[in-house]
Length: 273
Image (cartoon, rainbow, N blue to C red; front, side, top):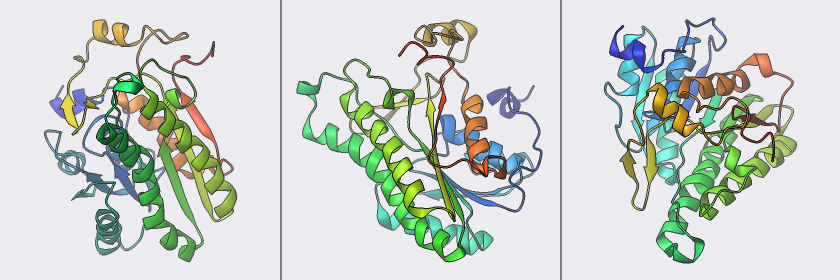
């Protein structure tokens, strides 16, 4: 098994569910975003992969090209409207259109609320909430002009549940759920807007201010068990590609009658909420 195959062992061959589509994915070079960018490409999409840095080896666009599919990489910060405009232009210049936006980039700072610095609070709000806002503001004129578009946001099971010492993260993820519903109401029927609410997932985490990459655990059965202790039903954490398949459903025409929905993908974490 090659390294690139081993990275997403639960990812199967594509079935053309995004054939003919152009998709923009943020936070695209690690975790859920990297799995989703690769999966979307396998399903036929041409992918614009946006990330603030290069975290993966090979980089996500190179990984997609190794699979025989198409992608361009845009180094950009989702908190920057200018970077978002560059990402949209990259889609139009490279592929002539944009059909799907997967607003996935996010992060958090876990510490007691009274110990949060102003910079840490602003960092989480800017990344999670304003980053999502900036992406939608950038692509919405294009989607409205075409009379169609599909937006998938990444919220969290912690937008539904509280979590100790995680005020900024939980607050912004709850706000993304409501933003999703509001936009679905305001911009249907042409534009669909949904979000996913992942539970514990085996990803490279970004913590602290400024953001830094931190491997929380190796992808082993032991670490999966440890990460899954809070999951009531399945008693394990998800692999990134399991969450990516939920995003794929919402990004594809298979969910053509779904909008304003917060799809909880948590292995049962919220069953007893």
